[in-house]
Length: 495
Ligand SMILES: Cc1cc2nc3c(=O)[nH]c(=O)nc-3n(C[C@H](O)[C@H](O)[C@H](O)COP(=O)(O)OP(=O)(O)OC[C@H]3O[C@@H](n4cnc5c(N)ncnc54)[C@H](O)[C@@H]3O)c2cc1C
Ligand code: SF4
Image (tube, rainbow, N blue to C red):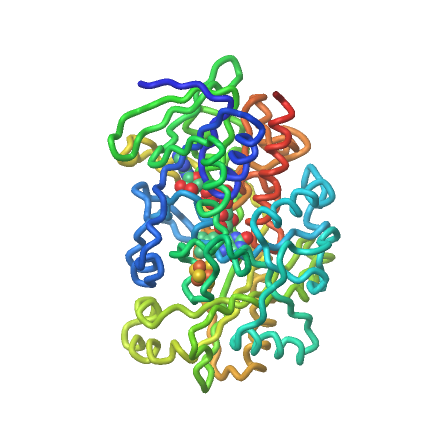
């Protein structure tokens, strides 16, 4: 077993891990980043819907065991694994939470606001300050102007206005304007796909490349197995090389967990940490898509149109339910082969033919933190001899109520835009997973303190979406990114 010593080791290269690692390296810390995935290939296959959505070319080797929707059984689901984590597949929507979303957090919106600004700068967000009717304070200006709306997006935007709503352009972390980097080609394989030309400002294309040049050691295909500990301190990380299956250990003065809201609690459990709330309060948003069939081709030029957002309904149920409702956003239609694949036998040909007449809206609804929704370890082991990650999740009635509220509003917009037939598609994914190592005022209420440090070990931090005490009503990446910058500053201050 090899051994090397670092000022910091970071596990996981999503938003949380990459941004912490970049900040630590820039502050002069000798830092290593462990990531179980490999670099994305950035070839034609990355924009091929069958390769990505059906064949799942980045699927990992270890399945998650998932029990949900009232089922008694666990099903095997394979998540993607790649350097940059879910940022490589994400849609670039970069929204801040609102001050009221912080009611149950150990810090306030104002504490995160400067880091939101930094994150927007670092991720090159294109947006339109002042256009969001529920915009939180402090969005003075985005680093880049929002681009013009494409025809399908304009259809939704203008209909929203005609209905008396206040649609606005989604702030997007995509490179539309910096000619020193690859520019966006405005294609329709963005949300859910790696960007072949690296114009999406994902962590691998931007932050990690820069951090690596500054000295960050990125170890890919490195599956963190457990944290090494002594006398209440974490001493390093043991990992397995996914190809050779050899074990290695890295010694470190501090460790930052950023293996995602499913991976980080599992790693703590495997390492023997026993805080009773580790893995609990898993959230994932309660999301659905309203699909409409139009009497015309909705996007004949096949252009980018994930551009319009509605926050009009964000606060509608706050006084009754104590949460946000959420947001409605433009989203793509899958290609005919993908639609056929997911359509019941007998309707497949018809569904494939109608794919080009479809336009859809995504509804992202806040879900409640409930202790019974959790991540644990299964008795069964994976190919590396590590216990599989087991997920149990059920939505509450109020989660579904918030989602259905948004879906009804989205349905009205689509109908008024000319949609004839409507159907609903509920999203079954953990792409917005957060909350399993919640930060809190006291160790009785959460696993981490307000600085996202584990209550039981002064040199163990968490920087991914696990820290979130509530999910709020907007897509999570910008909040994870901002918090990672905040945590990095705290870590640097401990030196
Ligand atoms: C298709 C899609 C579209 C999305 N669109 C948006 C959007 O438009 N806007 C938005 O805000 N959010 C969006 N999201 C959600 C967003 O991408 C996630 O919330 C965010 O990326 C989570 O970041 P993270 O740092 O918490 O974890 P992750 O991105 O999950 O990163 C965790 C990393 O740790 C690695 N890892 C796990 N276990 C281990 C281990 N044992 N050893 C080593 N490495 C390990 C994983 O491989 C992964 O790379 C989208 C997600 C998906 C999937
Ligand atoms: S829309 Fe732009 S950023 Fe997104 S995948 Fe296409 S080229 Fe890349």
